[in-house]
Amino acid sequence: METLFQTPAAQAALLAAAGALAFWLKDVPGLVVSWLKRFFISTLTLDSRDEFLFSALVEYMDAHPSLRQVNQFTARSVRQGTAYQSLEEDLRAGQAPRAYLSPGEGLHILWIDGRLVWIRRELQVTQSVFERISLSHFGRSSAFLSAFLQRAIDARAHRESDTLSVYIPNPFHGGDWMRARLGSRRPLASVVLKAGQAEALLGDLQRFYGAHERYAELGIPWRRGYLLYGPPGTGKTSLVTALASELHLNVCTLSLASPIVTDEKIHTLLAAVPQRSLLLIEDVDAFFRQRDAAHAQVKLSFSGFLNALDGVATQEGNVLFMTTNHAERLDEALIRAGRIDERVELGTCDEDQLRRLYLKFQPDEAAARAYAAENVGKAPSPAQVQGVLMRRFGAVRA
Image (cartoon, rainbow, N blue to C red; front, side, top):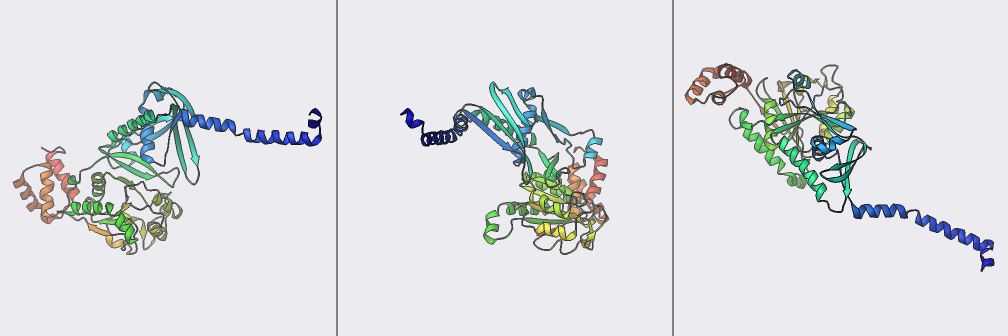
Protein backbone atom coordinates (compact mmCIF):
# COMPACT_ATOMS: atom_id res chain seq x y z
CA MET A 1 0.00 0.00 0.00
CA GLU A 2 2.86 2.36 0.86
CA THR A 3 4.35 1.73 -2.54
CA LEU A 4 1.00 2.49 -4.16
CA PHE A 5 0.85 5.98 -2.61
CA GLN A 6 4.41 6.63 -3.64
CA THR A 7 3.57 6.42 -7.32
CA PRO A 8 3.28 9.78 -9.11
CA ALA A 9 -0.23 9.01 -10.33
CA ALA A 10 -1.51 8.25 -6.83
CA GLN A 11 0.12 11.34 -5.39
CA ALA A 12 -1.43 13.46 -8.10
CA ALA A 13 -4.84 11.94 -7.38
CA LEU A 14 -4.45 12.62 -3.67
CA LEU A 15 -3.46 16.24 -4.33
CA ALA A 16 -6.44 16.68 -6.61
CA ALA A 17 -8.78 15.20 -4.01
CA ALA A 18 -7.30 17.39 -1.28
CA GLY A 19 -7.67 20.46 -3.50
CA ALA A 20 -11.29 19.62 -4.28
CA LEU A 21 -12.02 19.09 -0.58
CA ALA A 22 -10.35 22.40 0.33
CA PHE A 23 -12.30 24.20 -2.42
CA TRP A 24 -15.54 22.76 -1.10
CA LEU A 25 -14.73 23.51 2.53
CA LYS A 26 -13.71 27.13 1.90
CA ASP A 27 -17.37 28.19 1.95
CA VAL A 28 -18.18 26.29 5.13
CA PRO A 29 -17.15 29.07 7.61
CA GLY A 30 -19.27 31.59 5.75
CA LEU A 31 -22.19 29.17 5.59
CA VAL A 32 -21.87 28.43 9.31
CA VAL A 33 -21.81 32.16 10.14
CA SER A 34 -24.78 32.77 7.87
CA TRP A 35 -26.65 29.89 9.48
CA LEU A 36 -25.87 31.18 12.96
CA LYS A 37 -27.08 34.67 12.00
CA ARG A 38 -30.28 33.27 10.56
CA PHE A 39 -31.14 31.22 13.62
CA PHE A 40 -29.66 33.22 16.51
CA ILE A 41 -29.68 36.91 15.43
CA SER A 42 -32.57 39.23 14.52
CA THR A 43 -31.93 42.27 12.28
CA LEU A 44 -34.05 45.26 11.27
CA THR A 45 -32.89 47.28 8.24
CA LEU A 46 -34.21 50.64 7.01
CA ASP A 47 -32.93 53.05 4.40
CA SER A 48 -33.55 56.72 3.66
CA ARG A 49 -35.65 55.99 0.57
CA ASP A 50 -38.50 55.40 3.01
CA GLU A 51 -38.63 59.01 4.18
CA PHE A 52 -41.16 58.53 6.96
CA LEU A 53 -39.76 55.41 8.65
CA PHE A 54 -36.13 56.46 8.27
CA SER A 55 -36.76 59.95 9.64
CA ALA A 56 -38.88 58.51 12.46
CA LEU A 57 -36.04 56.18 13.46
CA VAL A 58 -33.41 58.93 13.28
CA GLU A 59 -35.50 61.33 15.36
CA TYR A 60 -36.27 58.63 17.94
CA MET A 61 -32.56 57.81 18.19
CA ASP A 62 -31.89 61.47 18.97
CA ALA A 63 -34.32 61.33 21.89
CA HIS A 64 -33.25 57.91 23.25
CA PRO A 65 -30.76 58.23 26.15
CA SER A 66 -29.02 54.90 25.43
CA LEU A 67 -28.12 56.04 21.90
CA ARG A 68 -26.38 59.11 23.30
CA GLN A 69 -23.65 56.71 24.51
CA VAL A 70 -21.99 56.71 21.10
CA ASN A 71 -19.35 59.32 20.36
CA GLN A 72 -19.73 59.50 16.57
CA PHE A 73 -22.91 61.11 15.25
CA THR A 74 -24.64 62.06 12.04
CA ALA A 75 -26.68 65.29 12.25
CA ARG A 76 -29.86 66.07 10.35
CA SER A 77 -31.50 69.48 10.55
CA VAL A 78 -35.23 70.10 10.81
CA ARG A 79 -36.56 73.61 10.73
CA GLN A 80 -38.78 74.50 13.64
CA GLY A 81 -40.56 77.55 12.26
CA THR A 82 -44.30 77.11 11.98
CA ALA A 83 -44.94 79.83 9.40
CA TYR A 84 -44.75 79.34 5.66
CA GLN A 85 -41.60 81.41 5.24
CA SER A 86 -37.90 81.29 4.38
CA LEU A 87 -35.01 80.10 6.53
CA GLU A 88 -33.81 83.70 6.86
CA GLU A 89 -37.21 84.76 8.24
CA ASP A 90 -37.16 81.81 10.65
CA LEU A 91 -33.74 82.89 11.93
CA ARG A 92 -34.84 86.51 12.36
CA ALA A 93 -37.79 85.22 14.38
CA GLY A 94 -35.43 83.29 16.64
CA GLN A 95 -36.49 79.88 15.28
CA ALA A 96 -33.20 78.24 14.35
CA PRO A 97 -33.24 74.70 12.87
CA ARG A 98 -33.04 71.81 15.32
CA ALA A 99 -30.21 69.29 14.86
CA TYR A 100 -31.20 65.63 15.30
CA LEU A 101 -28.23 63.43 16.25
CA SER A 102 -28.02 59.69 15.54
CA PRO A 103 -25.16 57.15 15.38
CA GLY A 104 -22.79 57.95 12.51
CA GLU A 105 -21.45 55.67 9.77
CA GLY A 106 -19.88 52.42 10.88
CA LEU A 107 -20.58 49.87 13.63
CA HIS A 108 -21.84 50.77 17.12
CA ILE A 109 -22.34 48.25 19.97
CA LEU A 110 -24.37 49.38 22.98
CA TRP A 111 -27.08 48.45 25.46
CA ILE A 112 -30.60 49.58 24.57
CA ASP A 113 -33.44 48.94 26.99
CA GLY A 114 -31.46 46.18 28.74
CA ARG A 115 -30.45 44.36 25.54
CA LEU A 116 -27.14 44.21 23.66
CA VAL A 117 -27.72 45.79 20.24
CA TRP A 118 -25.32 46.57 17.44
CA ILE A 119 -26.10 49.25 14.88
CA ARG A 120 -24.49 49.50 11.46
CA ARG A 121 -24.95 52.64 9.35
CA GLU A 122 -23.81 52.76 5.74
CA LEU A 123 -23.92 55.22 2.86
CA GLN A 124 -25.07 53.51 -0.34
CA VAL A 125 -24.10 55.02 -3.70
CA THR A 126 -25.89 53.66 -6.77
CA GLN A 127 -27.87 55.75 -9.25
CA SER A 128 -28.87 57.75 -6.18
CA VAL A 129 -27.35 58.28 -2.75
CA PHE A 130 -29.11 56.90 0.31
CA GLU A 131 -28.35 55.79 3.86
CA ARG A 132 -29.01 52.39 5.41
CA ILE A 133 -29.30 51.59 9.13
CA SER A 134 -29.38 48.03 10.50
CA LEU A 135 -30.17 47.14 14.12
CA SER A 136 -29.32 43.60 15.33
CA HIS A 137 -29.52 41.65 18.59
CA PHE A 138 -29.21 38.05 19.77
CA GLY A 139 -32.45 36.10 19.60
CA ARG A 140 -34.88 34.95 16.92
CA SER A 141 -37.88 36.93 18.10
CA SER A 142 -38.66 40.12 16.18
CA ALA A 143 -40.71 41.52 19.07
CA PHE A 144 -37.96 43.78 20.48
CA LEU A 145 -37.08 45.38 17.14
CA SER A 146 -40.74 45.70 16.12
CA ALA A 147 -41.56 47.40 19.41
CA PHE A 148 -38.54 49.72 19.08
CA LEU A 149 -39.60 50.78 15.58
CA GLN A 150 -43.23 51.20 16.64
CA ARG A 151 -42.17 53.55 19.43
CA ALA A 152 -40.24 55.58 16.87
CA ILE A 153 -43.31 55.71 14.59
CA ASP A 154 -45.59 56.71 17.47
CA ALA A 155 -43.21 59.48 18.56
CA ARG A 156 -43.02 60.85 15.01
CA ALA A 157 -46.80 60.63 14.52
CA HIS A 158 -47.42 62.39 17.83
CA ARG A 159 -45.02 65.20 16.94
CA GLU A 160 -46.46 65.71 13.48
CA SER A 161 -50.15 65.13 14.13
CA ASP A 162 -50.72 68.89 14.03
CA THR A 163 -47.92 69.86 11.67
CA LEU A 164 -47.41 70.18 7.93
CA SER A 165 -44.18 69.06 6.23
CA VAL A 166 -42.84 71.52 3.67
CA TYR A 167 -40.11 70.35 1.25
CA ILE A 168 -37.73 72.21 -1.02
CA PRO A 169 -35.17 70.91 -3.56
CA ASN A 170 -32.03 69.65 -1.83
CA PRO A 171 -29.33 72.27 -2.58
CA PHE A 172 -26.55 69.70 -2.06
CA HIS A 173 -27.76 66.80 -4.23
CA GLY A 174 -29.94 68.80 -6.61
CA GLY A 175 -32.02 65.80 -7.61
CA ASP A 176 -34.08 65.12 -4.52
CA TRP A 177 -36.04 66.92 -1.84
CA MET A 178 -35.28 67.87 1.74
CA ARG A 179 -37.74 68.82 4.44
CA ALA A 180 -37.22 72.50 5.03
CA ARG A 181 -39.62 73.06 7.90
CA LEU A 182 -42.67 71.95 9.80
CA GLY A 183 -45.65 74.25 9.67
CA SER A 184 -48.87 74.25 11.64
CA ARG A 185 -51.77 72.53 9.93
CA ARG A 186 -54.27 75.10 8.77
CA PRO A 187 -58.00 74.38 8.90
CA LEU A 188 -59.73 74.83 5.56
CA ALA A 189 -62.38 76.96 7.27
CA SER A 190 -59.66 79.51 8.15
CA VAL A 191 -59.29 80.40 4.44
CA VAL A 192 -62.34 82.53 3.66
CA LEU A 193 -63.00 82.33 -0.08
CA LYS A 194 -66.15 82.84 -2.08
CA ALA A 195 -68.90 80.46 -1.00
CA GLY A 196 -68.18 76.87 -2.01
CA GLN A 197 -64.77 77.41 -3.66
CA ALA A 198 -62.62 75.73 -1.02
CA GLU A 199 -65.12 72.91 -0.54
CA ALA A 200 -65.30 72.26 -4.28
CA LEU A 201 -61.51 71.97 -4.54
CA LEU A 202 -61.36 69.69 -1.51
CA GLY A 203 -64.03 67.44 -3.00
CA ASP A 204 -62.22 67.33 -6.34
CA LEU A 205 -58.98 66.28 -4.65
CA GLN A 206 -60.74 63.62 -2.60
CA ARG A 207 -62.31 62.16 -5.74
CA PHE A 208 -58.93 62.21 -7.47
CA TYR A 209 -57.18 60.30 -4.67
CA GLY A 210 -59.99 57.75 -4.70
CA ALA A 211 -59.88 57.17 -8.45
CA HIS A 212 -56.52 55.46 -8.98
CA GLU A 213 -58.02 52.28 -10.38
CA ARG A 214 -60.31 54.22 -12.73
CA TYR A 215 -57.36 56.18 -14.13
CA ALA A 216 -55.52 52.90 -14.68
CA GLU A 217 -58.52 51.37 -16.47
CA LEU A 218 -58.68 54.35 -18.82
CA GLY A 219 -54.91 54.40 -19.38
CA ILE A 220 -54.69 58.00 -18.17
CA PRO A 221 -51.73 59.18 -16.03
CA TRP A 222 -52.88 59.51 -12.44
CA ARG A 223 -51.96 63.16 -11.96
CA ARG A 224 -53.88 66.39 -11.53
CA GLY A 225 -53.05 70.03 -12.10
CA TYR A 226 -54.64 73.24 -10.82
CA LEU A 227 -54.08 76.90 -11.68
CA LEU A 228 -54.99 79.41 -8.97
CA TYR A 229 -55.07 82.95 -10.30
CA GLY A 230 -56.08 86.35 -9.03
CA PRO A 231 -54.70 89.55 -7.46
CA PRO A 232 -52.16 89.40 -4.63
CA GLY A 233 -53.59 88.64 -1.21
CA THR A 234 -56.54 86.57 -2.38
CA GLY A 235 -55.45 83.41 -0.56
CA LYS A 236 -53.76 81.30 -3.23
CA THR A 237 -50.89 79.99 -1.12
CA SER A 238 -53.04 79.78 2.01
CA LEU A 239 -55.54 77.63 0.11
CA VAL A 240 -52.86 75.13 -0.94
CA THR A 241 -51.57 74.91 2.63
CA ALA A 242 -55.10 74.39 3.98
CA LEU A 243 -55.92 71.69 1.41
CA ALA A 244 -52.69 69.85 2.25
CA SER A 245 -53.51 70.13 5.95
CA GLU A 246 -57.04 68.83 5.46
CA LEU A 247 -55.86 65.79 3.50
CA HIS A 248 -52.67 65.20 5.56
CA LEU A 249 -50.39 65.76 2.57
CA ASN A 250 -46.92 67.23 2.16
CA VAL A 251 -46.24 70.50 0.34
CA CYS A 252 -43.25 70.62 -2.03
CA THR A 253 -42.53 74.18 -3.05
CA LEU A 254 -40.46 74.69 -6.22
CA SER A 255 -38.96 77.96 -7.42
CA LEU A 256 -38.11 77.84 -11.11
CA ALA A 257 -35.50 80.53 -10.47
CA SER A 258 -33.44 78.26 -8.23
CA PRO A 259 -29.95 77.69 -9.74
CA ILE A 260 -30.29 73.93 -9.22
CA VAL A 261 -33.50 73.79 -11.30
CA THR A 262 -32.16 73.13 -14.80
CA ASP A 263 -33.41 71.17 -17.80
CA GLU A 264 -31.39 68.19 -16.57
CA LYS A 265 -32.40 68.32 -12.91
CA ILE A 266 -36.11 69.11 -13.12
CA HIS A 267 -36.97 65.65 -14.49
CA THR A 268 -35.22 64.06 -11.51
CA LEU A 269 -36.92 66.44 -9.08
CA LEU A 270 -40.41 65.75 -10.37
CA ALA A 271 -39.75 62.00 -10.32
CA ALA A 272 -38.60 62.23 -6.69
CA VAL A 273 -41.51 64.23 -5.24
CA PRO A 274 -42.48 62.49 -1.97
CA GLN A 275 -45.62 60.39 -2.08
CA ARG A 276 -48.93 62.14 -1.33
CA SER A 277 -47.60 65.62 -1.96
CA LEU A 278 -48.92 68.82 -3.41
CA LEU A 279 -46.30 70.38 -5.68
CA LEU A 280 -46.56 74.17 -5.48
CA ILE A 281 -45.04 76.51 -8.06
CA GLU A 282 -45.87 80.09 -7.12
CA ASP A 283 -45.97 83.13 -9.39
CA VAL A 284 -45.31 80.99 -12.45
CA ASP A 285 -45.74 84.02 -14.75
CA ALA A 286 -42.60 85.59 -13.27
CA PHE A 287 -40.18 83.08 -14.79
CA PHE A 288 -40.89 83.22 -18.52
CA ARG A 289 -41.70 85.96 -21.01
CA GLN A 290 -42.91 84.71 -24.38
CA ARG A 291 -41.26 81.35 -23.69
CA ASP A 292 -37.93 82.96 -22.85
CA ALA A 293 -36.41 83.15 -19.38
CA ALA A 294 -37.60 86.29 -17.63
CA HIS A 295 -34.18 86.97 -16.10
CA ALA A 296 -30.67 85.53 -16.00
CA GLN A 297 -31.27 83.66 -12.75
CA VAL A 298 -33.68 81.25 -14.47
CA LYS A 299 -31.61 78.29 -15.77
CA LEU A 300 -34.63 76.29 -16.93
CA SER A 301 -35.95 76.55 -20.48
CA PHE A 302 -39.66 76.79 -21.21
CA SER A 303 -39.57 73.62 -23.31
CA GLY A 304 -37.63 71.82 -20.57
CA PHE A 305 -40.31 72.79 -18.06
CA LEU A 306 -43.14 71.52 -20.29
CA ASN A 307 -41.31 68.28 -21.02
CA ALA A 308 -40.76 67.70 -17.32
CA LEU A 309 -44.47 68.22 -16.57
CA ASP A 310 -45.36 65.67 -19.23
CA GLY A 311 -42.47 63.29 -18.57
CA VAL A 312 -43.15 59.63 -17.97
CA ALA A 313 -40.82 59.78 -14.96
CA THR A 314 -43.19 62.12 -13.13
CA GLN A 315 -44.64 60.15 -10.24
CA GLU A 316 -48.29 59.22 -10.47
CA GLY A 317 -50.54 60.34 -7.65
CA ASN A 318 -48.92 63.76 -7.35
CA VAL A 319 -50.86 66.99 -7.65
CA LEU A 320 -49.54 70.23 -9.13
CA PHE A 321 -50.68 73.70 -8.07
CA MET A 322 -49.46 76.72 -10.01
CA THR A 323 -50.31 80.22 -8.87
CA THR A 324 -50.17 83.53 -10.70
CA ASN A 325 -51.29 87.11 -10.24
CA HIS A 326 -51.49 87.55 -14.03
CA ALA A 327 -53.16 84.63 -15.79
CA GLU A 328 -53.24 86.60 -19.04
CA ARG A 329 -49.43 86.47 -19.23
CA LEU A 330 -49.27 82.67 -19.26
CA ASP A 331 -48.56 80.81 -22.47
CA GLU A 332 -51.56 78.63 -23.33
CA ALA A 333 -49.23 75.66 -23.84
CA LEU A 334 -48.40 75.76 -20.13
CA ILE A 335 -52.00 75.58 -18.95
CA ARG A 336 -53.57 73.43 -21.63
CA ALA A 337 -55.74 70.45 -20.71
CA GLY A 338 -53.62 67.55 -19.49
CA ARG A 339 -51.23 69.88 -17.69
CA ILE A 340 -53.84 71.97 -15.90
CA ASP A 341 -57.19 70.30 -15.24
CA GLU A 342 -58.89 73.06 -13.24
CA ARG A 343 -58.53 76.85 -13.33
CA VAL A 344 -59.78 78.61 -10.21
CA GLU A 345 -60.03 82.38 -9.93
CA LEU A 346 -59.57 83.81 -6.45
CA GLY A 347 -60.73 87.40 -6.70
CA THR A 348 -61.41 90.32 -4.42
CA CYS A 349 -64.03 89.96 -1.71
CA ASP A 350 -67.72 89.75 -2.45
CA GLU A 351 -70.32 90.73 0.16
CA ASP A 352 -70.64 87.23 1.63
CA GLN A 353 -66.87 86.92 1.97
CA LEU A 354 -66.69 90.25 3.79
CA ARG A 355 -69.42 89.12 6.16
CA ARG A 356 -67.69 85.81 6.96
CA LEU A 357 -64.30 87.48 7.38
CA TYR A 358 -65.82 89.87 9.89
CA LEU A 359 -67.41 86.99 11.80
CA LYS A 360 -64.01 85.30 11.98
CA PHE A 361 -62.85 88.13 14.25
CA GLN A 362 -66.11 89.30 15.85
CA PRO A 363 -69.19 87.05 16.16
CA ASP A 364 -71.75 89.80 15.61
CA GLU A 365 -74.00 88.97 12.64
CA ALA A 366 -75.66 92.41 12.41
CA ALA A 367 -72.32 94.23 12.52
CA ALA A 368 -70.86 91.78 9.98
CA ARG A 369 -73.67 92.46 7.50
CA ALA A 370 -73.28 96.19 7.94
CA TYR A 371 -69.50 95.97 7.42
CA ALA A 372 -69.96 93.87 4.30
CA ALA A 373 -72.52 96.23 2.78
CA GLU A 374 -70.27 99.22 3.46
CA ASN A 375 -67.13 97.73 1.87
CA VAL A 376 -68.41 95.53 -0.95
CA GLY A 377 -67.85 98.19 -3.62
CA LYS A 378 -64.25 98.85 -2.60
CA ALA A 379 -62.91 95.52 -4.01
CA PRO A 380 -60.54 94.71 -1.15
CA SER A 381 -58.55 91.48 -1.09
CA PRO A 382 -59.05 89.03 1.79
CA ALA A 383 -55.55 89.88 3.04
CA GLN A 384 -56.40 93.58 3.16
CA VAL A 385 -59.65 92.92 5.00
CA GLN A 386 -57.91 90.64 7.47
CA GLY A 387 -55.30 93.32 8.16
CA VAL A 388 -57.98 95.92 8.88
CA LEU A 389 -59.94 93.56 11.14
CA MET A 390 -56.82 92.48 13.03
CA ARG A 391 -56.05 96.10 13.81
CA ARG A 392 -59.63 96.69 14.86
CA PHE A 393 -60.22 93.58 16.97
CA GLY A 394 -56.78 92.09 17.52
CA ALA A 395 -55.53 88.70 16.31
CA VAL A 396 -57.43 86.76 18.98
CA ARG A 397 -61.11 86.26 18.40
CA ALA A 398 -63.25 87.81 21.13
